[in-house]
Length: 116
Image 1 (cartoon, rainbow, N blue to C red):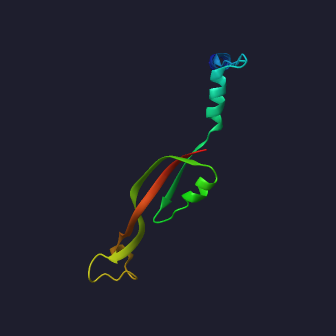
Image 2 (cartoon, rainbow, N blue to C red):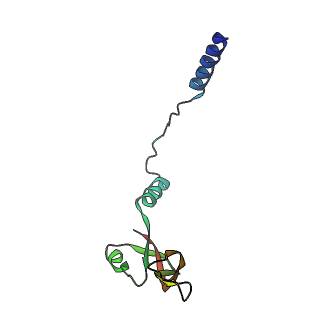
């Protein structure tokens, strides 16, 4: 019985090790190809997404560094939260369970997609 178990483990190990392939990446160099120069230009350009929330604005720093805005959009965002008592008799210092957290100020989040 032990021999059968050992043989099955050896067979399983052999099967796992022989099923793995090594991949060989053969690349042929292209000389003066227009497609390769276009691909190099695309790979050199980098994209970045930045967000500014609740009145922050630092986009001019990126524009001065040579970044170009591809896309700009905005969405609502809660800037600050406040805690209020849930009932008139609630003492928020003693009983933490009667505290409700509500949005205090709602602002705008601007999202920029930049490319250099």
